[in-house]
Length: 145
Image (cartoon, rainbow, N blue to C red; front, side, top):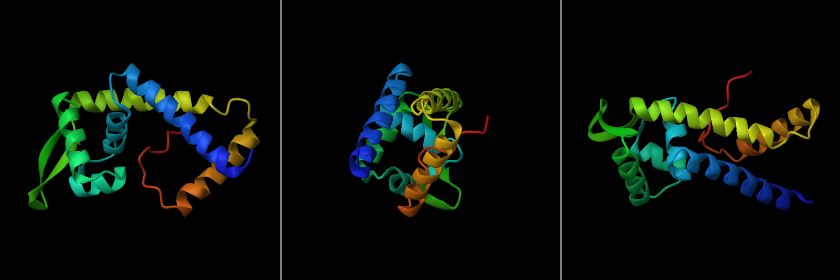
């Protein structure tokens, strides 16, 4: 299999795991992604749109739906009184942690047939592709086990 087909098919594989995990937590994949992005820190709407690659109207709808579920809230930005930051609620942080852990567990199983050296090579090569293409941190590195 060539690199193009392998990358595209890998993307579908990871997206399917992400969607399945999201469903089990009663989230859309986009809501799961939003929660994961917000785990380390709150973001302003502009920053959040850039990280998630969403237009303002799409992001507003996503934040509205997630806020209606009580998982995020808008807070005034302490540095800009006209702006808001999106913050996880206590419930949102709990669900984000559980969703993140379960999604990591499932994705970690995907290369189960690889030995430790092959897994290391795969991580190094994919990491270079991600860094070379300046992919935003939409899913943080899991803690080392």
